[in-house]
Image 1 (cartoon, one colour):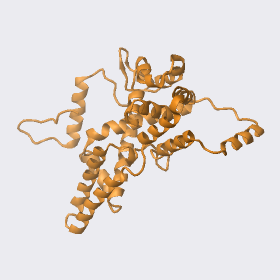
Image 2 (image 1 turned 180 degrees about the horizontal axis):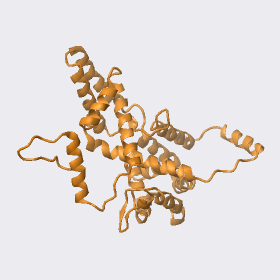
Image 3 (image 1 turned 90 degrees about the vertical axis):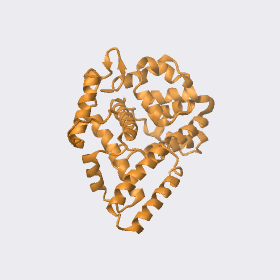
Image 4 (image 1 turned 45 degrees about the horizontal axis):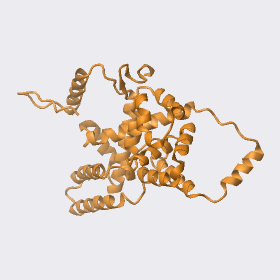
Length: 303
């Protein structure tokens, strides 16, 4: 983040002017650096908006979210530095997955008799691995809203980031109801309860660990199958759990990694270069990917 801009002898600039000058200062500092596309801006801002709306609902369903968000857009979102990384990471993962799904080769339909056989097999008892994979899919589904737009699930947030966001929203609402001491006390209780409930719903990291443990010795085969099927959540989950890292951190590291760094990043999965080839090709096609190398940002030409 840039340091706040100041002008000796004059009033501080408006938030809008300060933001514009800060952006220009960042540009002057690194003119050749890749910049966010409009798609990246819109996705990240949408993810932030949906997260703040969910947190506001947890605190007080009566929060005027429209007024809150309008004010924050005008004056600046509190804790912007905290939210930028997680929103950008979720947005980039979504862009990658959406692009990959668009370019996936359709699987030919099987004859009707084969479909019946497959249905019979699926109807059989679920293994521990099947259940862990299903739990991973459910946790991933919580990261989309009812319209299929990407969001950040509260269960996946770092506890400090979640607590800070709760306080930011509660502080805004407190200013609106400050004359009502009863409502103010209720806000404090709501924040405490939200913090306590955060760990109740398993997030992607917990689901990833469970899936990794269920896979056991078949880890390389499971990772290879995930790459072949473009099942990126499963691959990220296995890589994250194998390295004891969070899912979101691993997703961001993977989607921004240089091609040459992928074997090292995924070393715990024990994959050969042939198995990594579809992954490398998929990442290379992502426009404006935030990867710095000697040729500039990968996918820059795809803007």
